[in-house]
Image (cartoon, rainbow, N blue to C red; front, side, top):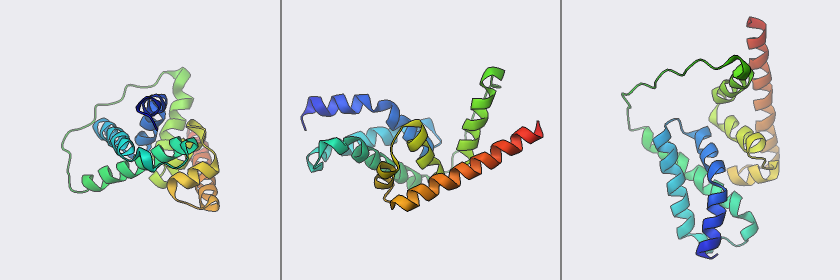
Length: 160
């Protein structure tokens, strides 16, 4: 893979890489570090990619591993700073904010497949490959996530 081809493909995936890192990491700096580390690892190993058609899947798998490395390192770190309060969402965006909060509340192993499937448009087969799961395991995670989201959103509607 040439330098130009690599650069073009990574640039086209920047948004996807960031959103995937958001599903695993809470802090902005950690997200940026993980994305940068993934790109560096991919550049160093670009010759190991056998089929360029799978570049996206390959790079996202590298990113997921980089995010897990950051999470392992965080177990030894205690952050003292508080997050600033989020401004109240506008009423027109309230429903999408409820969904975003519901997705955010999912466990990481359920949240990542949901983001990859619905926000990034990857197939179940691609998600299974990225996460190192069988197709049935990937489908089951999506099924569980949908059920939890449905339950949580219905509870919020009833409380209003």
